[in-house]
Structure formats: C-alpha cells, structure tokens
Amino acid sequence: GGRGVAATRLRGRSTDEFDRAQVQKAEKRCADAFQTVEALRKEQDALRDRHARELGDLRASVASDKVHVANAIRAETEAIRRQAETELKRERKRSASYKEKALAAHDREKRAHQTLKMTARAQAEDMVA
Image (cartoon, rainbow, N blue to C red):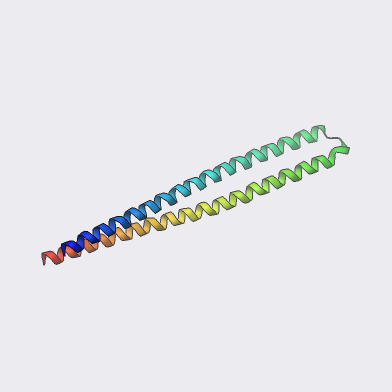
C-alpha cells in the first residue's frame, strides 16, 4: 500500500496547488474589483463636487435667458452620475461574486486537505495493524 499513499499525496498536492492557484486568482480578481469600485467611488465624488461647483457658478452668473443651459448641464451631470452609480453597483456585484468564489475555493482546499490527512492516517493505521 505504500505506493497508493504516494499517489494519493501527489494527487492531493496538485489538487491543493490547483485550489490555491484558484483562490489566488479569485483573490486577485476580488482585489481588482475592489480597486475599480474605489476608483468609481472617487469618480462619483468628483462628479458630485463638479456638479455642485457648476451649479454654484451657474446660479451666480446665469441670466434668465440662460436657464435652459443650466438645465442641460444639470441633466448631463445627472446622467453621468447615474452612469457612475450603475457601474459602481455592477462592480460591487462582481466583487461580491469573486469573493464568494474565492471563499468557496478556500473551503474546497480545506476539505481536500482534511480528507488527505484522514486518508493518510487511515492508511498508516492499516499498515501498522
């Protein structure tokens, strides 16, 4: 039975390495998604600030015949904000999905490791008995 143990260990190791690689890939994608979410959040804040500044400038300088210009800028800024919000939500979903996959891969790796330990222990006991 010594050969079976070695083969099981090799298979287990490659499974562990594969799962570890999967976890690392998923964690990388998760980190990337979080960075994207953060960038979108900053962009959204900048757009909100810009929107506020533009509205302030317009209120100070726009005469009654330029009200339609102010409305157009407000509508455009709102459209940009909505788009940024949509992208942020999408990135949050993607990020949550990557995190879920990373955790699932980690759990698989832990279960595989436990199974290998139990199998090795059982085979060792069989060899002693």
